[in-house]
Length: 188
Image (tube, rainbow, N blue to C red; front, side, top):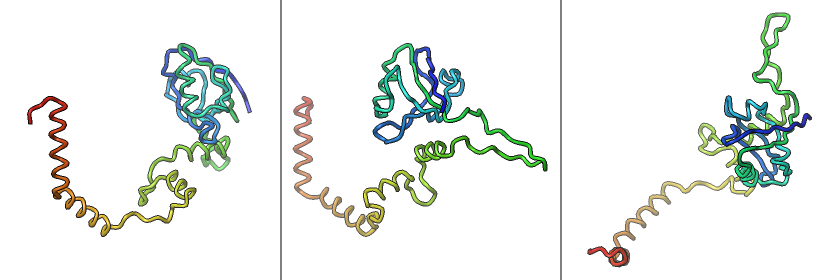
């Protein structure tokens, strides 16, 4: 692994987005770069691990603490980064002897998988639930719980409508309106 230091001259925005942190049990890493931004111009790459921020060990920081540390740096941000393998700006195409084009494999498959897993927020077709939500449901043992059925929802709506028409609700509504008018010094 190559470790290196990058110093970005301010002010913000720095042109990158973080993911991970101690609270996620995932090392802090760069998840996105702004094309042409300060971080991209300084050689930062998506997937780089953040070792330190302004000299403070990033391994002990939660995601929010890391963001706050970056915000507090002012006009100069110093990042200690680590990269598993050299960055390729685009997947390289390799010419084979039989003239087929092949793409080189992703440099570090485990890091790529980690990045894909942490940015998987879109619902899957036909489910309405994101992968992370399904994982959370599995961890909490609630994956087999059913959504309320239509019959239950209909009864609930009917009960709500009946409550709105009750004398108790009417008295409470009138009292609230009168009290609000008195407090706001408005004639009702």
